[in-house]
Amino acid sequence: MACDKDDDRSVAVTVNGTVLVGDRSDFNGAIDASFTGVEGSDSRSFIWNNNLSTADYNTDIITATVGTFQITVEDSEGSIVLNRTIDGGTEPDTTGGVTSSGVSGI
Image (tube, rainbow, N blue to C red; front, side):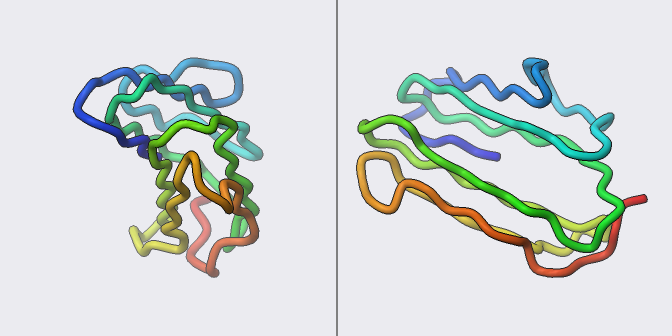
């Protein structure tokens, strides 16, 4: 996940109710991730162990201000199965669906 605007490091990412500090690799099963930012630029990543070859996703920017949100999902072999960007302050500000098929991670 990446949130981008200017150069401040002011982004917080929460996964399954826990604020992500650095990279983490202990997420299994369904995840619920969210982010907040204050006109900054930052990047966070985590490893999610998925026993399926695809993943459902839904992203939504709930602000009218500018900024971008990028989500990149790779399978267990590092192949990109999703790379989407949405912009705040423009429509559509929501995207979702199913990733391309990849190699499961468990």
